[in-house]
Image (cartoon, rainbow, N blue to C red):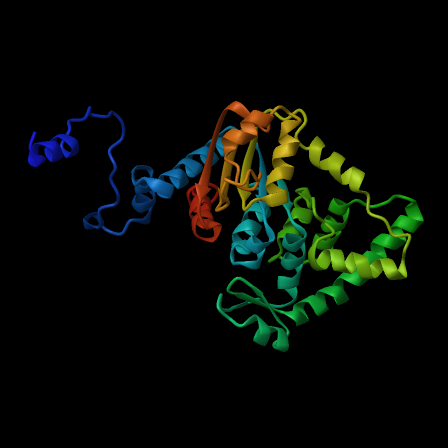
Length: 328
């Protein structure tokens, strides 16, 4: 067989036709209709199709009146996603919130002063000289944390005095609600959580500036305590006896695992949407796909789930626009 025939045989072999949905994106000859653009994600492929699936699953959570757990890491609050998250809590679109210490403290800190748009390539050395902390391309002046301490220490004093008066050790979620009540600012996620009595859990309360404040407070009041056991019980008990649960988790780490672990106690969630960029090759829970959670009983075998590999600051507002805020 000559070279041409060999090449043609290998390259031009016939295939079987596959059934399914043809790949097709938005045709801008049809105009700039954003609803149509987002609808076209379903047949675009790659992460656009996963985002379309996430929107579909979220709609089902809402339609089925599932108890919705919203989890997000602190960098989501550092960014402009804070306003999107606040909207969901303000309008009672979600039922349980789980975040990190940074997600708690930065929500309050932003009520005391703004973070500013910065640069990913800014010199850490120069920023340190100026007292500017960098969160990606967001600048958080250290004065914000000084102001946070001035605000937080009197609140801890109130909590401590109540502990002495009643003999009851407060749990972390009690303190978080107290923070929401005390800030009294409608821009705050925690304010609306307190006002709407939506529980906020923080499985890593001792981290970040919030942990620093507790640490400094303990020098003055070494007998001050926070009840970790009650926090664990409250978090886990939120899932027991629920008819259906839905999970929307932005980012990963301890927030993701805490929500999944609590749902394991009810034998798994009915719906799950992950949005993060973590990879699974190192065996981390952070990068694990929903299928791994099924093996643990954290997500039900018949559940509808998807992981969108994407920057949540880009895709989450689109998801909210097409679901929770669709008819507003």
